[in-house]
Image (cartoon, rainbow, N blue to C red; front, side, top):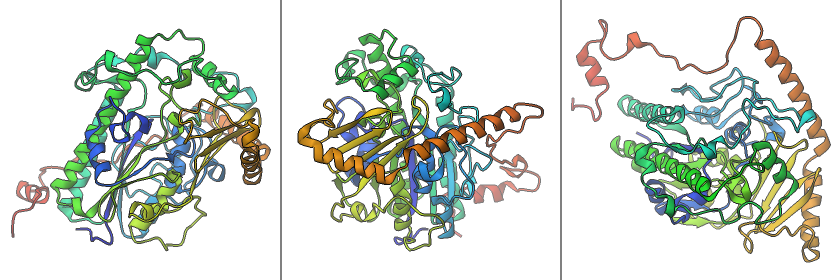
Length: 507
């Protein structure tokens, strides 16, 4: 099917998965045998970051290779312009069949963004219902803002909307891969994007029972274990974590549910890898596993995402397949790097770009080349703040800036848990000053704030209007012609049997 020079690409994406909570990244409790197996035969990136620690902005950056300040996809209700090329557009142009199975949190009327096929709907609304308001930044949007219910209601259930969704995604991804095999359609690029382990932390019994409460580790830095910075204080207030009385039993139960759902997501990795084996494409397929952002999971008393601390902003990134060398890669990178990386794998690295790309190809490092001196850039322009928040990770250093807050500087080699802010340390004055100058040269924070506020105001008007009169929803409904499926009067069963059988009978 695919040739070694044009391998298939299968990208498997989690939602809210911090690498710290996987066996592949050396957690001692969480069971992820399928991710572990890919990491053992491939490349594990140990400093991979999202570009915005929130679902829709992160995914838009991932799809386009562009930072959100360039795209204008600031929050979970920001429209993603159809005119912006994505890796799906470029791979189609390079001759790949492209398919999305699962969520990508596209907001706006374009629900394909370059994918030739999309075989499931999404989980969250595709309209402007979730627009923050920076002019009233201290007001909650109670209908959708995160709160502590996910922590207090964690547990086991035989079904739930996230479980139902991920079961559909897993089935649809496998079915699409089998269709490619039966139709001999290659090369293909399939994205299978799951909802778990995103809260609520409710897990199927078979995965919940993999763990015991007593074996669940507690956060390294609990509430008040380290000084709370102003942005974290706003997140604690906005999610209700600051006012909640959260005992050890609550924390262990929530983390147990999260760990169980990590194992559930890992089982979906296993299903897809097994399907690739079954259709005989293991040697022709590059696997990429990642997430849109992480989860604080009680570190510093914080839950969910929305900050640039490691558990929220870092993502797993594992690659395995033909030409990928076994190894661990320390150079900082981010999700915007995946577009040029996939084009490199596809032999299309020289393809003209329709818009500037902020990432670089990670393929040379994945293939065993030397480490580069790359950096990771983060931007946050959503709820719990009224000013943009910026992050730069370079080498051992992470710097976080917001005009409303004191800067933060951490040496992650010496202080991986980010306990000590070195921004005001005289010994680090030169480093902090250089980062501050870089922030000032990269961003016009005041102008970006003005654009965010203007975008929010416009989207609120559109949303109010769309709630009046006849509804027009952007939520995606996968096309399906049941009259053309299986066996029908115009489809002989012998033809259907032959068309859908793999491996096919010999001629």
